[in-house]
Amino acid sequence: MTQEILIALMTFSFVSSITPGPNNLMLMASGANFGLRRTIPHMLGISLGHAFMVTMVGVILLQVFVTYPVLNTILKVLSVGYMVWLAWKIANAVPPEAKSVTGSPFTFMQAAAFQWVNPKAWFMAITAITNYAPQENGVWVGALTVAAVFAATNLPSVSVWAWLGVQVRRLLRTPRRLRSFNITMAVLLLLSLYPVLTH
View 1: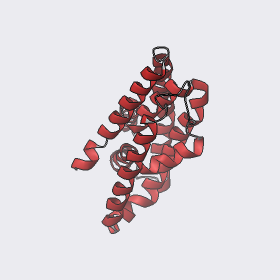
View 2 (view 1 turned 45 degrees about the vertical axis):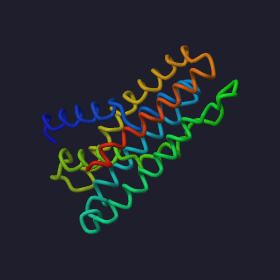
View 3 (view 1 turned 60 degrees about the vertical axis):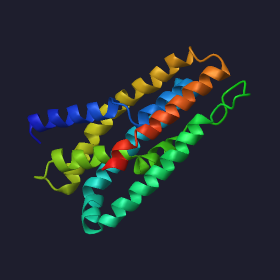
């Protein structure tokens, strides 16, 4: 991999990781509801789960999707359905009569598994593999190189969103404010599906 390609990949990885999307909106909601410490497994699950996904996309899934394009459509439908359910869960994290937050933050495995139904994660993985993976040393080396760059840039990026959620938490001292925040996060999560539904 040339230095120019590496810089381009790092830039793409950073920008796509830190901009709003399902992972970051959920981390912000988790930081606001559960605090930074309880959100750490969620952050690690996103970063390492996405790195694993990038590797598998590079090695296997792109060829599968080329051979069987209907699988891509099926995955898209499942992704949208799951994210609608997640939006509902976020919106209802604090019932109007509640005195404290209900539910629990994502575990490491839940966050890692979520990458497979996250449309933005798929876009990031496929774009990075098709545009930046070095081909000269084989498929595995190319996929692992891209995955390593993502892992290195993704964790600091998503941590910013969890930290922002913790800062917002100070403003959400009442159940009504927290409920309003969660509903807003749920609506934004649904809006993040717009590119998937229109392409």
